[in-house]
Image (cartoon, rainbow, N blue to C red; front, side, top):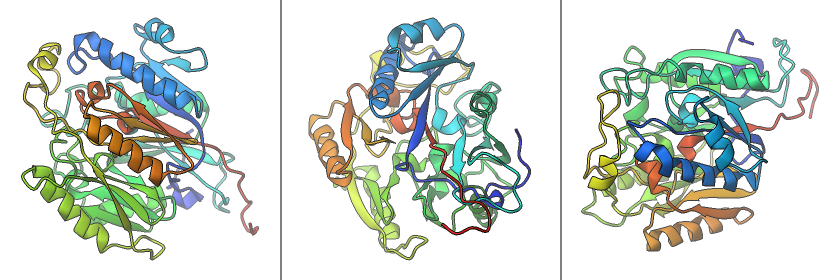
Length: 383
């Protein structure tokens, strides 16, 4: 059901990722021009991600008709598989941004307290600058998911991907100018106009802008979920390097300066927790040769620096699903830092996550949490 008006106008807001989920949505990779060797390696890692998350919350995997049987064989029976056509499997960006409400609005007739935002999408930049030339099936993913769940849909014409925003659930949003102000997204909108839409659709009151995302994250033009995320209200995790010769160093220092001088919507000064990046890592000749470079998608060239970041993890109900890149020192350090940051969660490292970053993202990028439906207080009543 399409809803007139904005989520905030109906009493909805985007909750923090650590709030309780009813399930997690994951797509299934198969593009031969993005996933090497017919996607067999990526599928194995996607399956391991889905299995890990299913230890903490229900998981639904969406696979095309040609891949449904393959996905069913690779995944345990407790994971639901839904047949769905898509252009690629980045559900953080093509799936719904779910919003909830805990207090009904007198102006709203909705009887559900979970809904989805359907942002516009142009494959991270459009025909001339995006990752592939045809994204017509991706444009339908939100409507299909919300249709399966029979949830309200808030359509939005502004181009935005879910990986470009991160919220604390208490009125603060993190994002980057490199992405949201990029001329290949919404060239006719000012920064102030974009902020206004974020406020109306996410229910936020304050937006903290970082100038740039992770070095090498050219596919998404610097999504925030590779660079920085909330760990809890008042605290953020920041991709970091101590290597002054690494181009990422300047970006991390730039972000640290801004975050250290920022407060959230509740007036708290932000605490910054540094999370070292691995590597640097680069695409090999063997990896690039396994990709069909036919001109329909952005070329994957040997020697390309991979946008690998431990910030690109997923928060499940009681679990942290964390990429592991084969850098033994940094892999172990990331597990330690996140175990300390989330003492009430079990940190599960996913070996071989390099296969996902070869395609342009990681665990957070391929997942989309659906929050549990809260009990809504009727309009006019107190909690």
